[in-house]
Image (cartoon, rainbow, N blue to C red; front, top):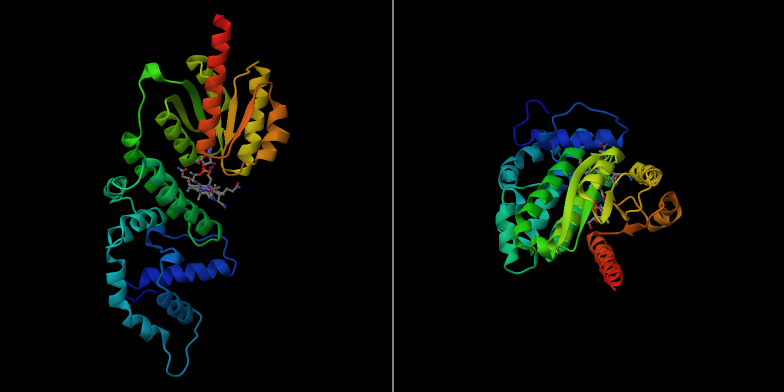
Length: 311
Ligand code: B12
């Protein structure tokens, strides 16, 4: 693309990369900030770019000449991120997540809080946007650095929402849980969402973070004496790491209830593999609301047994 205008070059290079990937490219040295994910390339530019690279021209059709004619349209199209354009805040937040644009996230969240509850914003815009990102990533239409940008945008939105979720005082706390993403796994959006929902409902959360070893978790249990432990993992291999952790906890005679969650985990795996590996209770938490239901149930049981012990 050398020699083309600064507006056109990133488009041509990105289209070239996508065609190379399609043709079997395994690795490339690229500057990711200069790449544009395919779904963000206007349809006409995409078609012209592909025709130019694949040499599909004929008498009366010169994709290069047509592309050069699109130059000014391109600079105005890309000038403003989608969340800044004059579109409803609902659409802008969803697009901001998909496009990983965090600059105006706080203003958008505040705007939407006039109409929606924090939970509605999380479910209808943040999670929906992340779901779209997941699909684009899976179909190889969104490179990893862009997924990270979207993840950071969601994190920023969750931070903005936190003060708007009801907080309960320490005396009203219903119980304590330790949350951790298992070793070898860096995904934490879902775990942090679980933390947010539990905190908003009166539970104390000790969020250990990502990449946590079972030894670190054991140290935290001994120090903080929680009612439960929550393990998160999004990679298939993390499900097996959870099994190892449960076995280690059993070897150390722990009986503390363990909640397991994350997109790669299935209820049948929890029933067939995780439960038999542990001497205490193992619960499958499909999402943050399921985690809340389990914690409420554990709190109720604890209250009941405290009541009967007092009689
Ligand atoms: C964002 C993302 C990333 C970001 C993570 C940023 C961050 N800070 O979290 C980055 C870019 C870093 C990333 C990296 C990688 N990723 Co990734 N990533 C994703 C993506 C697109 C979205 C995940 C997400 O945040 N979802 C939104 C949240 C809200 O949902 P959730 O996590 O499932 O959480 C909900 C429930 O599961 C549950 N839950 C979660 N935790 C817990 C815990 C408890 C206790 C309970 C009860 C419930 C619970 O409640 C949550 C809220 O409702 C997924 C695709 C997908 N569809 O899942 C791929 C995905 C998980 N990634 C994948 C891969 C392959 C990778 C990489 C290996 C890529 C690479 N080549 O390097 C690396 C892994 C690095 C590592 N060692 O972990 C694969 C995993 C494949 C597999 N099955 O093993 C996926 C599925 C994409 C795919 N289809 O290929 N990724």
